[in-house]
Image (cartoon, rainbow, N blue to C red; front, top):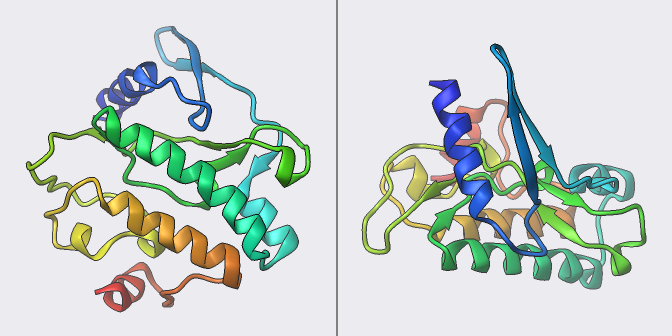
Length: 175
């Protein structure tokens, strides 16, 4: 099952060609492993940027979110729903200042292709970022926008909008 999921992720990544999605250059495989050669994002995760700096200004958040939204609009235009947009899945391309940097959306392990008008049903995502519709196991690609909203909230406030001691408690708060 994991091998099939990885193959699906690779197929999705091979379709991508956008400045705000990480590039997949090549794949290699031996008897035990599959290796993905991807674009180097030396600036690290947005999560590290958030932890290092705490809350951010509206202009900093706007720089990040504009690029994340550009990636999401692109993905949706080619029929892909990411389903796991979160801070650890957004990287900075370089170690340059945020104003001169590029935000990259990564980790397409939960991404899937969708057809407009046909609901998706697999529960997928990370608890604090998941849309209420996912918890009902009937949703469309717009769930990525909910996750973007959570990302923005955390950038501006320094903490998530829904909290709990367990994933179940967080999901109950989201409902």
